[in-house]
Length: 329
Image (cartoon, rainbow, N blue to C red; front, side, top):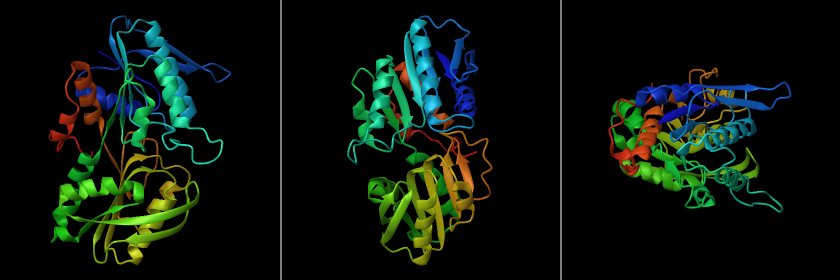
């Protein structure tokens, strides 16, 4: 087993290797003067099972486009080096929000990236909380995609950090931020034995909403919004305003992927949220997050998924394991 890291989230890759009791394989990634990527693998990979850790969202110095191109080159180098298998660990799947044709002549960009990955000969892809589950269907059976869920992390955090300070668990409400998040909120509510509410919203343009309507009772309740992505945080902060207007006593948000672009961090720290919890599927180490944003470490689940994939063990059992010690650092 050889573990490689692209440049998109080297901190996460290092933590994963700690759990696996191994070290990152030796590579050099640089850029030519014209901006093209140069990648050199300094180890023999012939007949080795290789893992590349590379989220394809924005990172400190690269765009999603750069991170995808780096990944494509990486895969090609390993395949040409006669690796036995190449598994891509992509904690965040870039372009996943462009998963359907929702206007005339629109590209389905998530399908384009899937086609590129499959054409390069990737053997397996491991990712987390896809924005749309149908993206799994963009890949053929020759390139299986494992979509893992962070709900178990969120539930454990809620029990340890929120419920333990409450007198009555009935005062907790799981809130779906839109119709697409209802199933996720209901699953978590069932695990916690609490009620749910839903915010229905209408968008005029990406990252912009016109109206929000709350369905459910949140008066004198602690509200927990759960979502897959928080980007500019405009919608999330408006949702917090709606909950506050309807009498919520406390408001938390859990998001699997914290893109936090543009004014997101400032908006969150000036918002009605008590806390916003994101994972480290994307590199958060270089950001000044402020007091209201916390980062949950998911390296244990990444590492265990990689180990189980290598040895042919079930990934479903990941959700049955005790993650008490691996949650939030």
